[in-house]
Image (cartoon, rainbow over all chains, first blue to last red):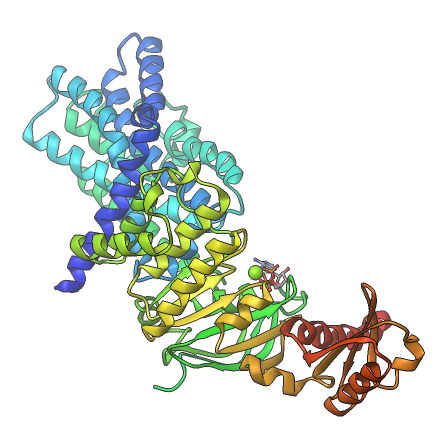
Amino acid sequence: MSDSRHRLRSLLAITYLNGVVPIRTQPLYLVNILASPLSFLFFIVIASHGVFLPEAVGGGMILMMLSMGTSVQTDMTHYRQDLKFQDVMVASPIEAPIYVAGLALSELVYALPGLFVFLLIWIAEGWANPQSALVLTGVLLLSWAFASALGFTLATYFEDVRETFVFSPLISLALSVLPPVYYPITALPAMWRPLAYLSPTTYAADLIHGAMGLGAPPLLAAGIDWLVLIAFTVALVVLAAYKARWREP
Amino acid sequence: MSAAIEARGLSKRYAKGREAALSEVSLSIPPGAVYGLIGRNGAGKTTFIRICATQLLPSAGDLRVLGFDVRGEERKIRERIACVPQESRPLYFLNVWELVYLYLKMRGLDAVESRRRTTNVLDELGLSEVKGTLVNRLSGGMRRRAMVAMVLASDAEILFLDEPTTGLDPIARREVWGAIRRASREKRTVLLTTHYLDEAEALSARLALLEKGRLLLEGPPSELRGRVRLPYRVTVQGSFLPSELERFGQVSDVEGGHLVFAQEGAARELAMLALSRGAKVSMGPVSLEDIFMEVVGRSIEDDAPAAEAT
Ligand SMILES: Nc1ncnc2c1ncn2[C@@H]1O[C@H](COP(=O)(O)OP(=O)(O)OP(=O)(O)O)[C@@H](O)[C@H]1O
Ligand SMILES: [Mg+2]
């Protein structure tokens, strides 16, 4: 009981520390996570003459979740290597999952303005209904969880923040550009499609596109999408639990 | 429970084929006191602290902290420790108050308790006036002090301080000493490293001297003198030839005279001789720095032929 109260306090303190306090010195943090999904949205919508708008909105929200994972990764690498902050955390009652969850929650603060913009479009286009809201919430939460877990694991291996600048674009290529997040999978050349199924975001996007009842009909049964997405998330969380270097070997 | 930290044959090799950063270190750190780790750059002090603070895994040997094994019982250890790593810096967007207060909240303390502890520690370490200042705007020494304040304010039973006073002015250093002494009066254990030997001697109930990952000397500062070959230092000024002095002990030149390390009898004899010649003389037990120079110096000499052979 009191243990869970300590954990909650710990979680909120980390969220406040990393998600609220920095805005005081740099308010632009608030639009940082919004920038790239919004530019994608522009690009896709203009290039497709508006045809892919539903896909681009769903994809944009998924991309925001991925960006949050990238931010966890960059922040953590910087804190660990440059400030030795991870060592301060390790030698304390603060547990690794609380630390990651706190950082991941703090990224949510920065994501709020972006989510708000996407939700406005979502509602304005008339895609909002209880069922689609539920699917959207579930998919975004899972994406956020696996992206943060992945970011955390990687961050404990990097020797320098500059390495994150190398990996982040590669990860976003693998998770959000190649997979049909912004466009229906049918727009992908047939030979690329099997590759797309290696990425959890394919299933996330399929679910969201399906829930909007627009764009191309969903490729897989929703049940399979959920199953795969949850399996990916569990796998990445388990990977973080066993492979992240909270303590240096 | 007896020891706060108990190491048995503790070794660390960062990578295969590299020299051991720690080899076969066995020592016992008593609870409720300050324990000092000294040694040259690269001696293994930080490695030892990081293993104790569960930030780094050992390669071999046993290590128990408060009776718990660092392999497998690290959660129990982590609930009871706090650490200022060497070269750690505070998160730059926090102010001094937030740094300490949020650290305590992260450790699970409630708001009232965290506030009380933060106010007290900032007062004690002379940081109250800058409590609203962003840590990035502080001088390097002030920033270091803020980090030390953070862990001193915690409820941890063991505090690991890796070079807590590097870069501090003499007055600030003494403020930190005061806070460290208070921590030990409160029956907390403090394991600290420092390159200031006067500090190590002034604060520590016991000291360990590491060199190349090996423990060369261990014990209370007052007893360490008994472990060196030549426990007395005599400085003579005036007309002495070095050759004349060599029979007393080990001679080196110093500003305006000679410094001789000697055993007690020889030291007295030399002092009497100098007095009889009307030369200026001072005699006393060796300082910790002398011990350091002798023991580490000897260890380097012992290693030299082996190093040449390889
Ligand atoms: N992360 C690391 N990877 C590889 N080798 C390391 C690492 N950290 C330390 N070492 C090596 O281990 C040895 C001991 O280093 P350590 O940092 O423990 O020394 P120290 O006594 O704290 O020195 P200093 O007084 O300079 O802080 C050194 O030879 C160092 O090069
Ligand atoms: Mg060190």
